[in-house]
Image 1 (tube, each protein chain N blue to C red):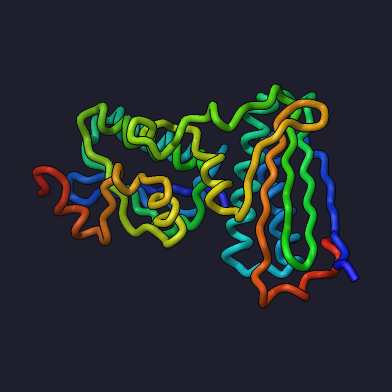
Image 2: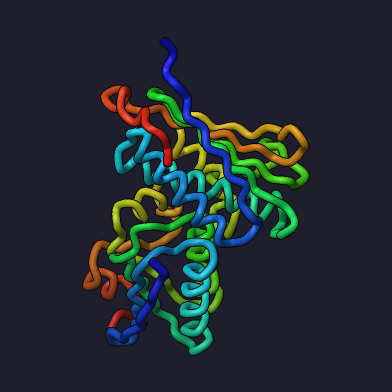
Length: 117
Length: 152
């Protein structure tokens, strides 16, 4: 299934709900485009909800890392929430759990942003 | 009597669509061979990474080149070969993606995932040059005896 992303606002946090596969090609491009647009719009708090993403390949992982570094470079924060088991496992074996701020649920994710409102 | 080995060979175009096609093919063969859902996912993903490697790094997206996918299985194991027409490479030259200094790299995790998801993995020089990725998954004991039917 092609990746779809919808953006919503929760306070001053931009939340992107992704659904589908984050893989080489279209899936990775969707992540790149949506995160880049938020960064360019000056958004500093971005939360990616991956509850409907049950597949990510190495290209998708690379795109997530690129998104993370792009947000960090703009002095912002990017966090992940609601990982499916397979995405969780991939982040664990690639040691990216030590890089990404992974939150269990949206409420705790909101509280974890700096100067949370 | 030795169990029959089934063999499937496919020449894939060096196009992005071949990545999904290869994964779909190997997923169906894995089902026929008798693997469980989780192993099928791992095999599919490993082969996907292998074909991405051939598409991007081996053949460098050159549409004049082919990616050769070979699948062999018997009641005990399945072996998948992904051969490209590139310059080949040495595994030792690939940076360790788990090293602290490489964690923020945006590429270089494909070989690691293939190794993690399969029981055996190696890179060797193909018969006419290029890189040949060879990955093997053993069938669980309880599944042996199933999946001896044809792959297609």
